[in-house]
Image (cartoon, rainbow, N blue to C red; front, side):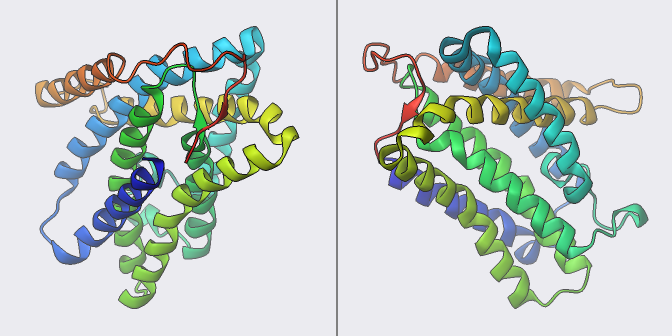
Length: 258
C-alpha cells in the first residue's frame, strides 16, 4: 500500500507542477484558495496525529525538538523565500528568486517532509492522513516552483526535469526512512526525534499559510473560512478511519512496512 501511496504522491506533484504550463489562466486568487485548504488540513493533521504520536513517544522532551524544527523551518525560508507556504507570487519584483537557492531549499524541505511518511505509528490512520496532507501541500508547492522557474526564463525541458526531481524527493525519503529503519538499529532510536522536528516545521508552515490567507488586517473571508472548516472536518474524519492501537506494543515510532 505504501508503494502505491508514494506513486500517487509523485503523480500529484507532477500534475501540480505541469498545471501552470498547461493552464495559463490559473490566478493568484485560485492559488490562495488551494493554499487555504491545504494549509488548514496540514495544520489539523499535525495537531490531530503527529503531535499526539510524538507526545506518546517522547513525552515532555517532544517540545524541545518541535521548537527546534519550527525555527529550522524559519531558517530554511532564507533559501526557499516562502515558496513552501505560498508566500512567493510570480511577477512581484521582490520575488526574483535565484534558481539555485530555490532548488536547494525546496529539495531539503521536500526530503524532510518525506521522513514521517516512512514510519509506522501507534494509530494506523496517521500514515494515510499524512500522505493526503503532503499531497495537498505538494500541489501549490509544485505549481509555484514551476511558475517561478519559467518566470526566471528557464527552458521548459529543464523545468520539467527539476519538477520530476522535486516530485521524487519525498517518496525517496519515505523509502529511505523505511530502509534505514530496518537496517540500522541506531536510526530507529533517533527517528522519533527527527519526526518531532519535522512536526515543528509543519506547525510553522501550517500556521503561516493560515495567517497569510487573510488580508492585511488578518480578516479571513467566509469562503476561506468554509475551506478551512472543510479541511478540519476532513482531518477529523481521518481520526476515525484505520485505527490500530494494538498493533504496536513498543514505545517508539518505528518503521512502516512497505
